[in-house]
Length: 384
Figure 1: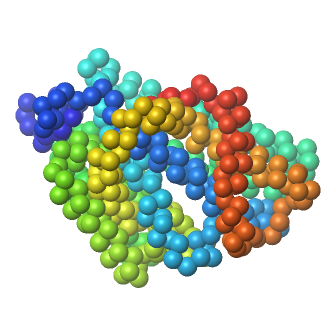
Figure 2: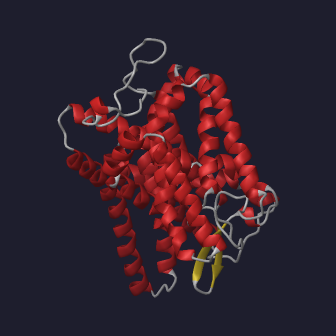
């Protein structure tokens, strides 16, 4: 589907009417590459948490840190591994496709939005509620004073689902902006994100920064409405998008205003993620260009039967894997304490042995997460 600028004949449509692809073939029913991008972005987040979370235990309980605070130059990897901009971008594309199909079936926008909110909110609230009840029980029954911090660590990755739910609720506004103003909506959102950074970093209005939780992630989601136009661009434009984002990243980071890491690093005076800064806009542009540059190679791989099977399996379990991955990680940490006959340890610095243990940390957390998914998460497997 290739969107076109709105005109008088299209104002009643859910989105711009799709044009046929340049090849003249009808668009396929399912885009394997879109599925792959969405699932792999969640999987990268999961593996990052499993592999690179360091728990620092103090008198009040655990607090997380990462090897980025101990290893110089490792932050450059976050330009590839911080994939939430890509997730919101692909999510915007999927929402547009889903809404167009629902519109053709006669479904109203209110019913469509409510169904998608309910489908995502119910599992997230069920998980959060279960951990809150468990935390209250353990605290009162065993007098564990730091259990509330454990609960917070386990459910904290759900923050982005909260933002995603807000963007779903704002879908009617996003669709109107897309029909009425087309690409200008992206420019205005980018400008608004930059203004928020000026208010925050130049004039000290820290609270204003939280507006970018909706503006920046809303921009990434809105950019997904242009996914098919980006796909239809000549190959030389893919490289142009990639290099534009990359140069913007270097310029912003080495200006001295923004940190280089695309995730929060304890001890840094500023985080590019909490709340997001304008740097995330540059990261979004870079990642859009990157996925288009590697698209031909990945599509060839995804046409192979084995890769199709992997793609389908990962997509089927991506949501429950994300929901329960910190639960599995907590179980794995508790098991390692039990086997070792020890309890919480002080801060562990990432030395050579720590790095060599990373495959075990990922594998152990995965083995502890899979039973939880089988017991509680299978009903949400395959949610699109």
